[in-house]
Length: 133
Image (cartoon, rainbow, N blue to C red; front, side, top):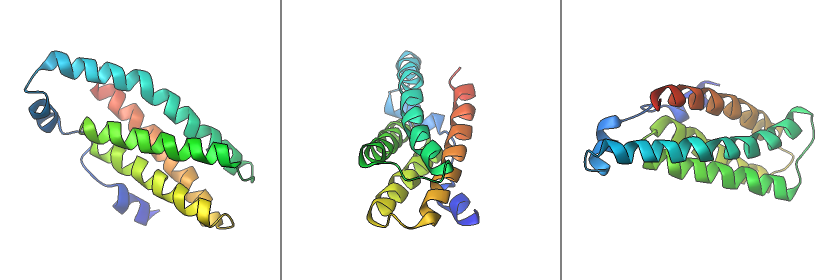
C-alpha cells in the first residue's frame, strides 16, 4: 500500500495554477467544475463495474477492461487539466495497472491493486466535490 501512496502523492488542487490557465476568470472555473461534476461519475461507474468483477474473484471480459482503461485515461486528462494533480495521479495508476493486467491476466496483484486504487479514487473524488462547491 505504501508504494501506491508514494505513486499517487501530489497536491490535491492547485487553484492558482488553474486560475492562471483561465486568465483568472472565475466563471470559466465554475463551467469547468460543472462539466467535471457531470462527467466523472459516469467514468467512476465504469471503473467500479470492473472492480466488482475483481472483488467477486472473476476476470472481466475485454470490453469491460477497455472501458476501465478508457475511463481512467479520461479522468486522468480531465483531472490534470483542472489541476487536480492527485486525482490525475490516481487515474494514471489505474490506467497503467490496467494495461499491465491486460498483458498479464494471471497476476492477482494487479487485481488487488485496482481494487485499492478504486477506493482511493472515490475518496479523492469526494474531497474534490467539496472543493468544487
